[in-house]
Amino acid sequence: MAGIDQRIGMKLSDLETPTLLLDKAACERNLACMASFFKDRPSNLRPHFKNHKCVTLARKQIAAGAVGMTCAKLAEAEVLVEHGFGDVLIANQVVGEIKTQRLARLAKKARVGVAIDCLEHAVAISKAAAEAGSTVNLLVEVDIGMGRCGVQPGEPALNLVRDIVKLPNICFAGLQAYEGHLVNVLEREERASRAKSAMQLAVETRKLIESAGHKVACISGCSSATYDSTGVLPGVDEIQAGTYVTMDKQYKKLVPEFEIALSVLVRVISRPSVHKAVIDVGVKGAGCEFGLPGIRDFPDVEIPFFLAEEHCVINQCPDWKVGQLLHFIPTHACTTCNLHREILVHENDIVAEIWPIEASGKLT
Image (cartoon, rainbow, N blue to C red; front, side, top):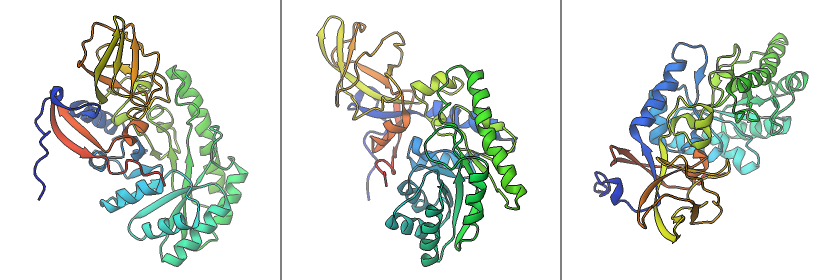
């Protein structure tokens, strides 16, 4: 029988670095803030597991009122179902015989939905589900401007629905639409206006499909940056917000009502000159694809270089000493969590819990 991890009860200052941290109080306030927003609204929250990939945190989201979880990959959905989650949506296309067989087997254990945007997807899934004796829910993905996956709105989407409803062992469960090309528009009113216009394409497509006699059970989409705009648009039923629970530097600019709970504890490992410091994290420990990260409590410190694997160079830094601890704030929480295998949850600078990140590295 495994004993209690010796890091429980330790001061953050005694930990090795780099270490992924979660501020428990800030995280709980984020959970409560989002749950409260949707409590008396017609749309439901289906948080995106890809943000943190942590089963414990996903359970807290369900306990706060979420109707199910969204996943980016089939392997993430498998992790959730293995841990007892009964309703998962894979907001992505699942392609290839081995994967469709995995998907069909998973659908025997839980309610599983998956996005499709062509008949080939549906036919392959139908075949695998028939062989497994399961039923898979299909959401037709509609491209509302992101230019990634998705069938075009209107007649193309309707024609695809007409084809898939004829197939055995699948259920047409609705539409997926993501206004991801607009979530980083910094000006909030502009973001809301443009996102609503984009999502309205999916709403109008829903009306067209329903007028042709096919029930559209839901439209699922949106994000942490648009939860209060497209998330309240009539006709939108599920909100796939992810980052709100941990937050990061980029999303903090977009929705400042949520707190940054996630950080990477790091140390200064070198002071090559009076104005330069090097810290012990690089792209193998923190996501940086949304821009340059920051340092908590030092908002004026700029990080001009963050391209090394294990190092981050900071010019014009304060009088930090070698060995000084800092809280490194990534610009993207999702890719940061995927780089770690556990997250240390702290209260008042003391390690309170350690949560595994069970779906870390699950890319298939």
